[in-house]
Image (cartoon, rainbow, N blue to C red):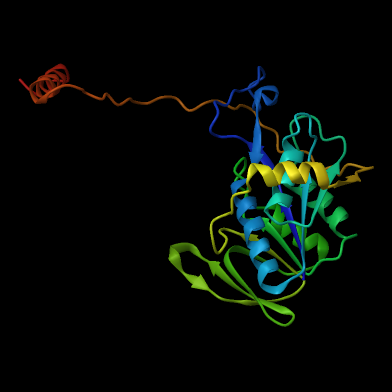
Length: 259
C-alpha cells in the first residue's frame, strides 16, 4: 500500500498578522509558517493505515523554502513515520499560488509516483476553500471523497466514514486508487520527539522535483484586505464583592440603565 500525503504550509495564526502596504495581501515578509492542521490529520491517518496494512508513506509539499520551515515540516513527517519526503520547487515567489495551480503542480509531480491512495487535508487554514483535493483527483482521473473522518482498507477498495451537514454520517466504499480529503484522523496527530526530528535531519534525504513551467492560473484579484474592526470590548472587574457591585452599579448608571 503506497500512500501519498500532500501537505501545505500556512501562516501561523497564533502570531499577529500584518497587511502589506498595498492592502491586498498579508505582509509575507513578516510571516512564519506552520503545517496546515488538516494536513497534519491527513498525515496521521496515512501513518495509521501504514501501521495496519503495511506499505510506505510519501509526503509532498510545494513552496519556496527561504527560512527552512518547509524542510522542517518534512523532517518532522519523517520523524513521525513517513518513508519519503518530496519537495516541489520552482518560481513560486509573490502572493502565492491559486488552488488550480497547486492542484496542477501536484498532479504533474504525483503522476510519476506509484500510489494506491492519496490523502490531503479537507481544506487549508489560509483559504478554507477545500478545492485542491477535488481538482487534484480530477487531474489524476481517480475518485474523490471529502470530509473523511475514518478509513478502512479492503481488497482493492476503502470504506470511509464521511461527514455531511447536520451531523449525518455515511460509509461509502470507494475503488482504489482514490483521493480522500481528511477532516480528522482516527486518533489525534502524534508527537515527534525532538531527538527523532534531529535524527531525520541528519539521515533523511528530501527529494526535489523542479517545476520547469508554471501553470497560468492566476489568483483571484483582491481589491482590499483589512483587519476586522473592534465593535466592543469586555471589562474584567477585580476586587471584593462590594467593589465589584459598586463598579457594576456605576456602569449601569453611565448607560442610563439605572437611576
